[in-house]
Image (tube, rainbow, N blue to C red; front, side, top):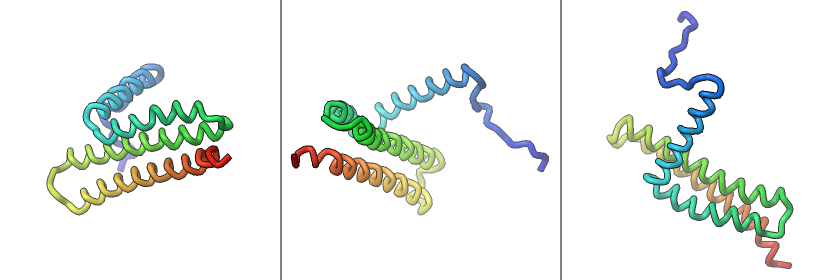
Amino acid sequence: MTGHHQTSEFKSKSGVKRIYAALLYSMHGFRTAWRSEHAFRQELMLVVPGVVIALLLPLPALQKLALIAVLILVLIVELLNSAIEAVVDRVSFEHHPLSKNAKDFGSAAVFLALSLAGVTWAVIVLPLFAR
């Protein structure tokens, strides 16, 4: 090996151009997720009002941040799960145990993120109603 590593011709630019390109890629990713991923749309429809509710609750700033952060985490994990599914489907639509594992692992990650969000909201918000 000569120490050279192969890079994609699509590898990003440098400096401000890279930041601008990354922003455009991210916007395209959000748009594509909204258009083609039903689960992402469902979760976003919970996240948006959840963020508003979290901001309006009579809680310290760090608790509000925790409530919002776990909601954003759900979207992050959902996007990563969708990316895994897209790559698996790009490779082959053939049923294969490794493809199933990849998709199941992604689904399990989303489940854990949703569970963490639910428990976090329960622990922080339920005591407000016990007062």
